[in-house]
Every structure is written in C-alpha cells, then in structure tokens.
Length: 118
Image (tube, rainbow, N blue to C red; front, side, top):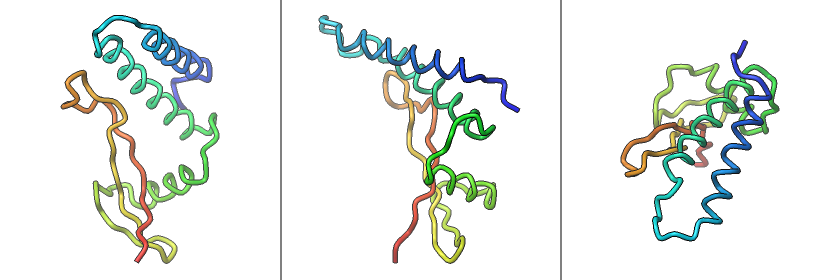
C-alpha cells in the first residue's frame, strides 16, 4: 500500500505545470530562475508516480510493465548488468530524472531496462 493518493499525483502534476508556466512567462535574464524548484517538483512527481504505478492505482505502459517484471525477477540488478529473460537480453540502465542547480548532483533517477539486440 502506498502513502500517496491520486490527489497527491494531481497536485504534483499541477505544481510542475505551474512552475513551467512561470518559467515560460519569465522575462528576466536569470537562466536558472525556477530551475531548482522545477527539478524538485520533477523528483516528487516521479516518486509519487512510481509508487502509484507499483500499487496499481496508475496504469503502466507496456515498457513499464516489462520493466516491473524484470525488476521483480532481478531485484539486485545494478547499472549495466545484463540478464537473459524470456530468451532475450536486457541491460539495466539509469538516467537522471532531476538534478541539482549545478547539474552535478542527481536528485532522482529514472531506471529502465534496455533490450539488447545482437
């Protein structure tokens, strides 16, 4: 059971959209204006979405469903680990979902499985 609700997801989505709108309407010359807040909002939305999808409250797309099955089958997989599943090879991958203002610190990671084609 998750401690997030669909209302939390809607609020996080709305907060991110409002920050993006503020950025688009900003006419100053500070290129980093709202960036830290947007990155934090993206990380929060990712966390909420991931938990709601795991609980079955949000629908996963086919790739996310496959990734969830692979994660369940190979829970200890680390970055760039290659596994064979249902006769196909997959590599565990990570990419930054949100970073700090400097871009050097990752606040949240996207994880996914990449199918390797020989």
